[in-house]
Image (cartoon, rainbow, N blue to C red; front, top):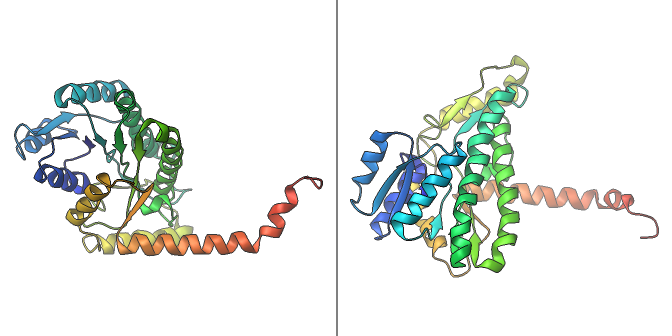
Length: 273
């Protein structure tokens, strides 16, 4: 089951799984998109209408997917979008909307599937987060915040599910040549001139790079299928040389900073500890 299969990585993953002979439940937002999806593989491509921010609907759709397929083996919470704007520029309404989809929508889907997976003592959950769930960028603070939040939830969830035979692997793509930078990108209503050198510059870079990303969604889909079948899947899978480089740089800098300030960090202990 993959949420958000109309376009982008979700669509590429659904097509790759169908090409392997799998049965795929894909969620979409319109009747036209549902009809289009089902034509990919009649009988094996099952399109269901879903708004991931509607908790009751999420539970109903997951129950229908379970009934129609005999059981969801792999769940990919993929539906999401990106809010572009400085942290101060974003209204609380815009921030809440971002988290409703990227965090609460993903968690609601996972929660709805888990009772079925627990009953079978089997299942794999592959939430699509982002390298932005590891690294912050000017103009993507709210989007990154939603992905950081999902990463923290899923890292903990993996520990809770380990004894039950259910695994969690977070999928962390870098730039993919999809419509994410256009169709799935929204700008804050407010823009503040003081942030032009940081937020504004990042906005311009995002616009310039749209359509020129390094990542091939079809190849990314194959990598996701490979990790979904792995005997011992990782907790995180970075996708793309750009994502790998950004993450390695962040972790290296973070480790150096921890070491540099370690002597001060330990001063908060009781003296007789």
